[in-house]
Length: 470
Image (cartoon, rainbow, N blue to C red; front, side, top):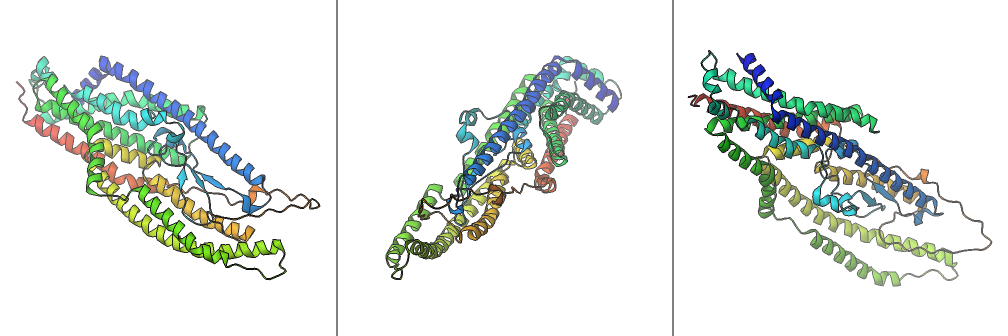
């Protein structure tokens, strides 16, 4: 009987006007998301390559390494365009120094603030907002609608178990609606190579896991709507309750968790921390100012040699000062990071009450656009800073920080110095998470999606066991 109910439900779903509308809307939105994602990625890639080339041109325009203003950029990834996460909110460029604190600047939304208002239409938005609502619309009258029309009583006039009935209806609805999703999703995947986006096997695996988690998320809302239909007598009531639950799950709980965690865990203000760092830096510089005046060169020293000795003396003072600044900054940063992590952990754990938050965490982790993206970028930049500092020390004899004094002398008879070769500069490598690391980090949330499915279907089944069929 399960097969009979499953086939009947699947046929009714496919032949219904709701399926036609859903298929049309899903096709337009999903294909548009893939197309726009590909265009955004190509634009980001072009912008990134232009920035890299500009950096190389700037290096090549100098004749002394000490004059170089080097920058590193976060390279765009194809999946970042399909599941944006925080990739548009974090700084993409870092002005590199041999020592001192690094800061990422130039966010995508900072350059194009209009997108910060409306955001991009990516797969996370389509699954999280649109398709979860479609699941409610499809299944809100799965049980009580049959009762109102009188078909429920006719069905159970035959020897059929309640488990086969509700299981067949849920499976038929899930397969039917999945067809409306999978066809445009497959078309979108096929479009990527045609649009110039070549995904690696690692990225195809990630995309497959994202789509799998999206189907699990879609399925839990189907089970939820079916459960609500099994505890109410009228379709209008079940639709209203389902809509209220959807609003709380999708719109309210994720935002409320951030507000509650902000109240419960106080994180030091970034502006106050920056002010403390600047004040301490100025204080140390003022303390060193008398030492600078104490510098004297032996009599008869050539001006060029005197400047070299003065630069070395200033370098020693700066290095000693920088040690104190680094220790002070490290303490402030550690306090800030620990508090921020505590607040983030609390917010994420509270938000996991909502299936929408769980799906967002799963998809962004798999796409590499979760909160960990910023940490990985900064960790890669800090590792590169050591390489860059050693390179500059080798080329200039100094490890340059923020402040530097440069004296340029000219000699009409001197031959024009050679331009720098940008290829000598060490290349920055962004260490993105492997697919195994991303899957491992998202396994908890993916497990929660499956748990929600089991709980909601179990609730729907329990409610239907006590449902009045008359």
